[in-house]
Image (cartoon, chains in turn yellow, cyan):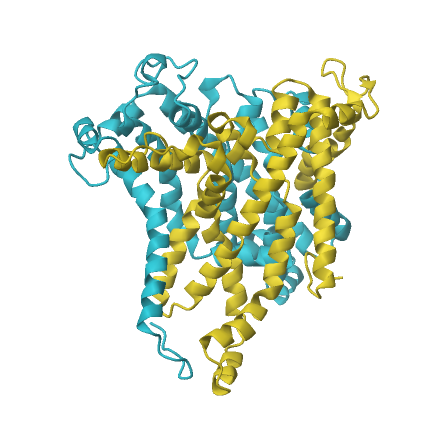
Length: 286
Length: 299
């Protein structure tokens, strides 16, 4: 029964892992992987000598950092807020609305943003009609990091609350009652009961987030790269795509991809170690 | 309305209104853009001109844009392609995933630990974009429908969610069925599947949304064959980038009108990509929590 799934994974996940050796070759699709010439570390030397690569890496880390700082607390705050709403009808309604954008494609999300904030969008339409000038957020490289973070929040923050809501629901209400009886006000209860109750999930989410630090959202950037210019919108994934596939320089792109995978794996491993040292489970139990 | 626990202080009016304003603001942030898009797609050209672009308040509503859109061959084909990929893809993914998850949930099955590890490894290690691209094109996938479906047909995450559900299906029930001589297929079909309808619905939605939303595979494997483009790709090239569509035979939507196509028409394409989702969503929405959580906890 497991055969079809295993076969598909072997072909499309494991064979590409072997295919990583193209990063050490001068791969030529006409000759194939077995007969292409070996390049040793040439591709990597080229990669590390390319200033665009370092720019892309710097962009990736910067965007990742901005997204972490500005995105991460929002689902937690939103979940706590929603959890404090007593009416179940209101809670369910808000939940079903905020989950929705998670299911929109990036193409759709960016089109909607374009219509709202773009040069001809609703915001500028309003500004123009009140003689306030125009402000095209969608093509401004300087504010691009904030823009993509906001897009991410709009699309995923609502979905992100699910796991925090569950953690909140799992906190024993007796603890609150006891604390209240001991005279702890709402803020002390939040500090001493709610937040410690969320700690495990928060750490787990941070570990996952750090592991994905080099994947800041491929499709989101691919779509907007042209409008904003690649100085601001080039990230490692788009770099590998443009200088690997679009230019058919496959080995070079594979080297860029391999670099990213290895660093990501190290990041996950390191973040997990860190979680363990704080006494949390992280991705797996020690 | 749930009762407030006796120990909890009654809320201060200031805090209460801040809470209401925040939640209201969050709702508006999601709903207002959708409202504007839908309304603009339903507006006459006159109304759009009066509003100076996007329409915020109903004024002269019409279905013209939708009629025009659905007579356009590019959009009609794209719609069919999108539905085709979504339906066929979801069916394949579900069959493969259900079989795999059920096989792995029976802890006495041969080598199930090894296979589980094999699956989980793929969640953390991958060959990356280019080696995957080379494998698919190497198998002749360039320009082929299967290239849009098979490479991503298995989601290990979804299999793990299904598996943990199947593992928790009452073991006694399954043992009883086995004693009665039911084969594994029979048990899966008449016991496990009917008792796990909710999670099946959620996982199907996850897969279906993935196929419906995919555009990158199209960009990789059929970037030039516009007659095979799904809706998302039409949305991207035509609405988002405002590019003329190569290969479009219909003059209404084709090269000459591409730059100046009415806003209502563009917004109608946006709405079209939304509609199937919004139809299915309410039926599945209440089950999300179970699906997502099992994945997060036991995955």
